[in-house]
Amino acid sequence: MSARVLVVDDIITNVKLLEAKLSAEYFDVATALNGLDALSICERGEADIVLLDVMMPGMDGFEVCRRLKSGATTAHIPVVMVTALDQPSDRLKGLDAGADDFLTKPLDDTALFARVRSLVRLKSVTDELRNRALASRRLGIADPLAAAASETGLNGRILLVEDRPTVVERLQAALSAFHAVEVEADPQQALVRAAEGEFDSVLVSLDLKSYDGLRLCSQLRSLERTRNISVLMLGEAEDRARILRGLEIGAHDFLIRPIDRNELLARVRTQVRRKRFTEKLRDSVQSSMEMAVMDQLTGLHNRRFMDSRLSVMFDESALRARSLAMLVLDVDRFKLVNDSWGHDAGDEVLREFADRVRACTRGIDLVARMGGEEIVVVLPDTTLEAAYAVAERIRERVEAEAFAIHSNARQIPVTVSIGVASRRAGDASSAEMMKRADDALYRAKAAGRNRVIVANAA
Image 1: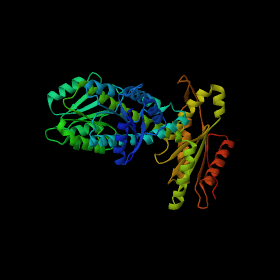
Image 2: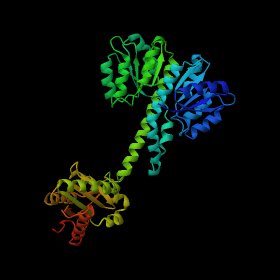
Image 3: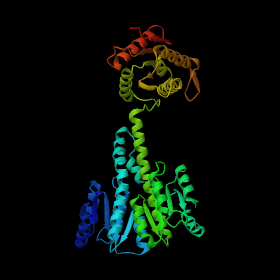
Image 4: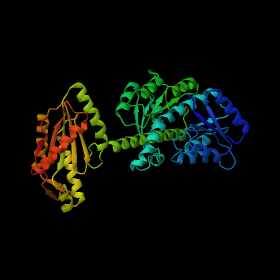
């Protein structure tokens, strides 16, 4: 897997050494000799991962990392801090700054490449979501990147998979101060609980008595319902080969025993933050997709969606020689509702009107708001006679009970006029069927409203 790796170090020999090693592994390498240049490269979107030296003059690596992780456009970029410092306090400082990992010199090439590839894979998952989320700004959604970058990583739901009571007690005591922790000793049951629960992270011991912890990690990453949960491995120093294998199969991070409490908290917090970052982007994409095809007032499909979907439904109907019908509905004297009771009351009427129409249709029917007070219903596999029956059912339901307005403080009568048409063998497109339904609606209005009119026979 190729990626753009940014190497940041003020010592040119260190830069050249890492550049040569990474290039030999087919990574594209960019370099920076100071923090400001590194920030500029990342803000231009020219790095997939950053290998960041800690000890630099001016702005040190910790500050560079903090700025990257607090920026809406750079928070998603993985940062690996590379330094000769090997004290737990130094590693903790890097993790608190938002670093995704902390590697000490001299670097182990195998571990470095495994970590880089693992983090690049994780970043690639969010890149498409970020691009789509950015497009949602045009739809009026609050900046999704800023919201995602502000995540604290606290108050997560953590599942600890460990079968040694003393270890469980120690880890649970450390984590419970900041997260809700659940424990499961049975790996198979842990998989079920992870699929059914809303966990942010799963901590998996690689030393389970009767089960391969790596297999559980693989299962968590492969199942659709658990693949978005962060997976953190807990292993011994001699488990190095298995830990690297775990990173290859998709685990997000690891801790080596004896586990430092502060490092545990920092790494779990990082994983919770990353999972929620991706989750918020995914929610933003979902919201933008809904806004693109849904009418926000009524919850029905909008005209854009109806125009594209109706064309497909019409072509399928013609190809298979199946019936297709259409209703065009318009609230009677809706302007009078707005003029008499206000536009808020008009909105309440439209929402209730949409709910009543939806209640009289099937899941396979297309119900869309064309604009104003007009709704179109497209009924596949429905004859003209059956469509008329549906229209009458809607008309009766609208007329039967007054509509509540002003937050249920008042009720007003509402009626609807409906035009009905169906596809004819000679129709070249859905526009001809819609034109007949529109004409029928016009006749229903002219005939006194609150009625259903069927388009003239061919």
